[in-house]
Length: 209
Image 1 (cartoon, rainbow, N blue to C red):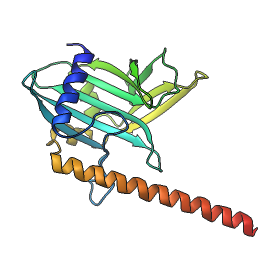
Image 2 (cartoon, rainbow, N blue to C red):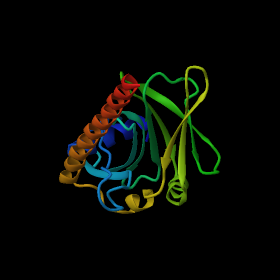
Image 3 (cartoon, helix red, strand yellow):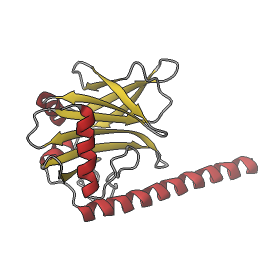
């Protein structure tokens, strides 16, 4: 099964749960109370009616303090399929031709090539085996390395703590997805307001001096 078909199946399953799997639009767990709420990884599954199989996505999204999208990483799985897929998404403006590199701790780097770019995001995919998932479960950090227009590495660091629990745990249901969307929107507003206030305070302090 090619990655394009896999992407279509995943999107179909996620839509059934009213979750948009467009990078930068998906939810991220709110940093609320308790260790579980702070886990940056989350999982959603759904039934794909075309292939009559369950499809799951385990996702981690990086955001700025102001709530802006930086990068995301997804592990895509189809029930009964041995091969899995990693999908990495970053904003446009990075070099497309060299693709990106994936590296878990001290393991060898793997190349992941861009497949498509939209107006606000570029997406790369890589077929992986169970060994890669095992490395994610036992690892500490996954580095996604892109290249800026000067050819300089632009790393994105994903903390793997909590991945194993989410991978082996239950998927979010529809109500939980909606709640996390609301929490993310509120968190982004709070971050933006805090940053704006810090800038205003700094401006006032400079004026007073």
